[in-house]
Image (cartoon, rainbow, N blue to C red; front, top):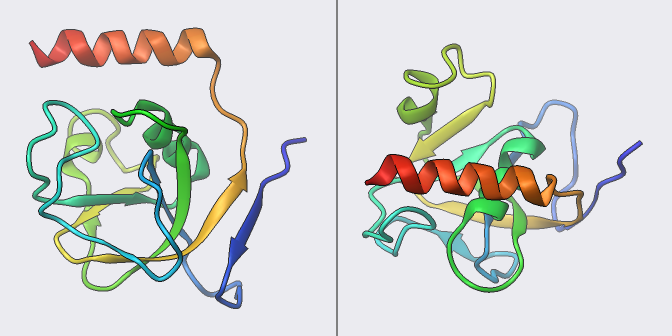
Length: 137
Protein backbone atom coordinates (compact mmCIF):
# COMPACT_ATOMS: atom_id res chain seq x y z
CA UNK A 1 0.00 0.00 0.00
CA UNK A 2 1.31 3.42 -0.95
CA UNK A 3 1.78 5.79 1.93
CA UNK A 4 1.89 9.53 1.29
CA UNK A 5 3.16 11.99 3.84
CA UNK A 6 2.78 15.73 3.84
CA UNK A 7 3.75 18.70 5.93
CA UNK A 8 1.22 21.45 6.32
CA UNK A 9 0.32 24.37 8.54
CA UNK A 10 -3.45 23.87 8.26
CA UNK A 11 -5.73 21.68 10.33
CA UNK A 12 -7.28 18.90 8.26
CA UNK A 13 -11.04 18.51 8.26
CA UNK A 14 -13.14 15.92 6.45
CA UNK A 15 -15.15 18.85 5.08
CA UNK A 16 -12.26 20.73 3.49
CA UNK A 17 -11.56 20.09 -0.21
CA UNK A 18 -7.93 19.17 -0.79
CA UNK A 19 -6.24 20.55 -3.90
CA UNK A 20 -2.81 19.67 -5.26
CA UNK A 21 -0.45 21.43 -7.67
CA UNK A 22 2.33 19.44 -9.35
CA UNK A 23 5.40 21.34 -10.55
CA UNK A 24 9.19 21.49 -10.45
CA UNK A 25 9.18 24.92 -8.81
CA UNK A 26 10.67 25.11 -5.31
CA UNK A 27 8.02 26.94 -3.30
CA UNK A 28 7.58 27.72 0.37
CA UNK A 29 4.50 27.41 2.54
CA UNK A 30 2.60 30.68 2.37
CA UNK A 31 3.77 31.61 -1.15
CA UNK A 32 1.23 32.34 -3.84
CA UNK A 33 1.14 30.61 -7.22
CA UNK A 34 -0.27 33.06 -9.73
CA UNK A 35 -0.72 33.67 -13.46
CA UNK A 36 1.77 35.72 -15.41
CA UNK A 37 4.78 33.43 -15.05
CA UNK A 38 6.09 30.96 -17.61
CA UNK A 39 3.97 27.86 -17.91
CA UNK A 40 5.23 24.47 -16.68
CA UNK A 41 4.41 22.99 -20.08
CA UNK A 42 4.59 23.45 -23.83
CA UNK A 43 6.47 26.47 -25.13
CA UNK A 44 6.61 28.06 -21.66
CA UNK A 45 4.47 30.99 -22.69
CA UNK A 46 3.12 33.30 -20.02
CA UNK A 47 0.47 31.32 -18.17
CA UNK A 48 -3.07 32.65 -18.49
CA UNK A 49 -4.33 30.13 -15.95
CA UNK A 50 -2.91 28.12 -13.09
CA UNK A 51 -3.95 24.54 -12.54
CA UNK A 52 -4.85 22.35 -9.59
CA UNK A 53 -6.39 18.96 -9.04
CA UNK A 54 -8.16 17.02 -6.32
CA UNK A 55 -6.38 13.76 -7.16
CA UNK A 56 -2.85 12.93 -6.11
CA UNK A 57 -2.32 10.94 -9.32
CA UNK A 58 -3.04 13.97 -11.54
CA UNK A 59 -0.70 16.08 -9.39
CA UNK A 60 2.02 13.43 -9.75
CA UNK A 61 1.61 13.64 -13.53
CA UNK A 62 1.88 17.43 -13.29
CA UNK A 63 5.13 17.17 -11.34
CA UNK A 64 6.56 14.53 -13.68
CA UNK A 65 5.64 16.30 -16.92
CA UNK A 66 6.62 19.83 -15.88
CA UNK A 67 9.49 21.32 -17.87
CA UNK A 68 12.71 22.35 -16.23
CA UNK A 69 15.39 20.90 -14.07
CA UNK A 70 15.03 19.66 -10.54
CA UNK A 71 12.74 17.19 -8.92
CA UNK A 72 9.01 17.13 -9.23
CA UNK A 73 7.14 18.58 -6.28
CA UNK A 74 3.54 18.36 -5.19
CA UNK A 75 2.03 21.13 -3.13
CA UNK A 76 -1.20 21.29 -1.19
CA UNK A 77 -2.82 24.54 -2.28
CA UNK A 78 -5.77 26.64 -1.24
CA UNK A 79 -7.73 28.38 -4.00
CA UNK A 80 -8.01 32.11 -3.25
CA UNK A 81 -10.71 32.81 -5.86
CA UNK A 82 -13.03 30.96 -8.18
CA UNK A 83 -11.92 27.81 -9.97
CA UNK A 84 -13.42 26.09 -13.01
CA UNK A 85 -13.10 22.71 -14.68
CA UNK A 86 -10.02 22.55 -16.92
CA UNK A 87 -11.68 22.46 -20.36
CA UNK A 88 -8.54 21.05 -22.04
CA UNK A 89 -9.05 17.88 -20.02
CA UNK A 90 -12.71 17.80 -19.08
CA UNK A 91 -14.18 18.75 -22.45
CA UNK A 92 -11.66 17.07 -24.75
CA UNK A 93 -9.93 14.15 -23.08
CA UNK A 94 -11.82 13.09 -19.96
CA UNK A 95 -15.50 14.11 -20.12
CA UNK A 96 -17.05 14.38 -16.68
CA UNK A 97 -13.75 15.47 -15.09
CA UNK A 98 -12.59 12.12 -13.58
CA UNK A 99 -9.12 13.67 -13.07
CA UNK A 100 -10.78 16.38 -10.95
CA UNK A 101 -8.62 18.97 -12.75
CA UNK A 102 -9.35 22.66 -12.44
CA UNK A 103 -7.93 26.02 -13.45
CA UNK A 104 -8.13 29.58 -12.24
CA UNK A 105 -6.90 33.07 -12.97
CA UNK A 106 -6.81 33.70 -9.22
CA UNK A 107 -3.81 32.74 -7.07
CA UNK A 108 -3.40 29.59 -5.02
CA UNK A 109 -1.74 29.70 -1.64
CA UNK A 110 0.77 26.95 -0.85
CA UNK A 111 -0.36 25.43 2.45
CA UNK A 112 1.72 22.25 2.47
CA UNK A 113 3.82 19.84 0.46
CA UNK A 114 3.42 16.13 -0.19
CA UNK A 115 6.94 14.97 0.62
CA UNK A 116 6.63 11.25 -0.07
CA UNK A 117 4.91 9.99 -3.20
CA UNK A 118 5.46 7.30 -5.77
CA UNK A 119 5.87 8.36 -9.39
CA UNK A 120 4.86 6.56 -12.54
CA UNK A 121 7.04 4.07 -14.41
CA UNK A 122 9.82 5.94 -16.30
CA UNK A 123 8.79 4.26 -19.58
CA UNK A 124 5.22 5.50 -19.10
CA UNK A 125 6.49 9.04 -18.40
CA UNK A 126 8.69 9.01 -21.50
CA UNK A 127 5.84 7.74 -23.68
CA UNK A 128 3.55 10.48 -22.36
CA UNK A 129 6.19 13.18 -22.92
CA UNK A 130 6.78 11.90 -26.45
CA UNK A 131 3.05 11.99 -27.16
CA UNK A 132 2.79 15.56 -25.83
CA UNK A 133 5.75 16.66 -27.92
CA UNK A 134 4.29 15.04 -31.05
CA UNK A 135 0.91 16.72 -30.51
CA UNK A 136 2.51 20.17 -30.05
CA UNK A 137 3.93 20.23 -33.59
